[in-house]
Amino acid sequence: MKQLSRASKWLAIVGVCCAAACAPATKESPSTTAASSTRLRRLEAIHHAQVWKATNVRSMDLRAGPRGPLAFEPNETVACDFVQRPRGSGSTPKFSCATASDHELKVRYGKTNGEVYAQVAATRLMWALGFWSNAMYPVKVACAGCPLDPFKDPIAAARSRITTFDPATIDVKVDGLTIETKPDEGWSWKELDQVDEQAGGASKAQRDALTLLAVLMQHSSNKSINQRIVCLDPPACSQTLMMISDAGKTFGRANRFNKDAVAAVNFKEWSHEPIWNGSAGCIGDLPRSWSGTLRDPRVGEAGRKFLADLLAQLTDTQLHDLFDVSRFTERDPTATIDDWVNAFKQKRSAIADRHCDS
Image (cartoon, rainbow, N blue to C red; front, side):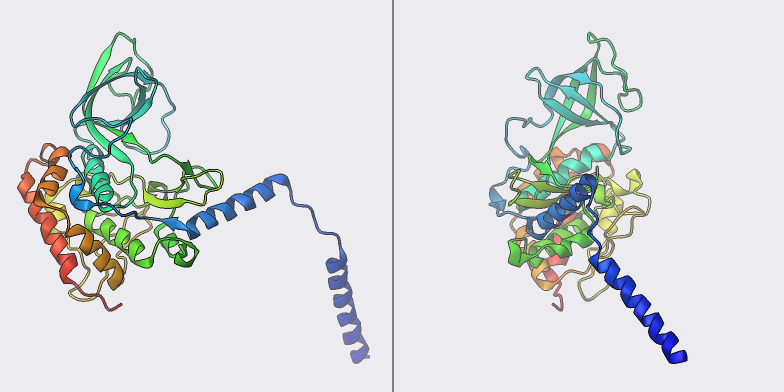
């Protein structure tokens, strides 16, 4: 009887499995299908994404910055009309305004806002070396209809009222379609490992070089939202890139709570923070941020050398222009431009002089 009982049990299980296998497939809802397609599109975009393109490093004008229809001269006074927008995410003082030619600009402002200074230096350094970045222009903004503090009080004032913001920066995004499955998704640093060189994506050396550059700059707020996946040729999206889109907490020391006073243009903190964690090997020294996705990364020899070769091409004049145009001495008057240049060169030497095991 026990044998029969056991046989009966197995027959019942087989019957249930067969019934499940033979049952008609459940039709997915349109929203489920669309979500799956979007996730697949994002994964494909990562697989063949680029992070770097070749530049003539020595010819890059770090004072002028990237040229284009929305390029502005250093300290130029830009006139625009306030555009009332929802506050959005983030805690950095910013607002939107439109020029006479109807171009809407993203403006960051505030003398005590470290991102106004750090963003200019970080984006111009990445741009000069060939890593994708937004264009940041250090300017003054004369805004018609702006309240005194648009981030805290986003209600438009009378248009006859002109409010001047000095210092300020204008942020011009890389032109392209953002690839994401949800708003402000970005990408985490571990997702760089999903880039496939065989599929046309960036090499491991280029990805490691970008990672090591994040260490050099002390990219503290490295949460996913501050990186962006971009499609350059929609709708095909055969050309995609992965970039740092917000490098406002740099040139200080990365810290758990991304404190602006520590993380953004602080000479003492940045100059004292080493490139490497330890006297040997190639583990970068990047303290953890509570919201971040990158901490003390390990890089390979090819990536170290790739970045070292790029950094070696920067001249003293370019480095001086980089820190001067970014107004670092206004942010931190304890150090001169020469102090910043010398600290940079010491970090560059630390990268050049190290040898990685692989």
